[in-house]
Length: 150
Image 1 (tube, one colour):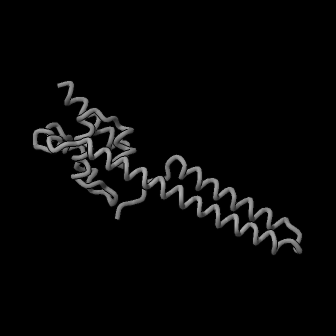
Image 2 (image 1 turned 180 degrees about the horizontal axis):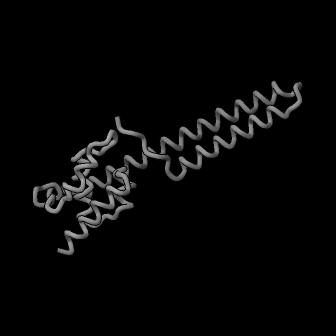
């Protein structure tokens, strides 16, 4: 099973917001007079449920945007991007040791990343749209750039 990517942009802010809000709730509840705690507790519970629902919506939107970006990226490629000739210069010896880890990308995933790198996409693009680790994406883009220079 593939590891989930780290939260990005709005998702990270939403997680921090929920954590801050939860801490604030606990502080308010602990300092409130005993007579008001049931009312405050109910209001805080409603606010917490709303915050978690918003967090879920932000995370879902982030996942949907990532999937749509991948779909658009794959639509940009045509069949000529995946021929034996297109894989010339692929840095197999440098990539091979990175295929052995528990969360290692598949070789097909790396071939796809290579096709994009060979078409001029940079490291940040490969990381963002293909969920590659930055050092591996950099290795591919550097090799693609060297291939173009030769």
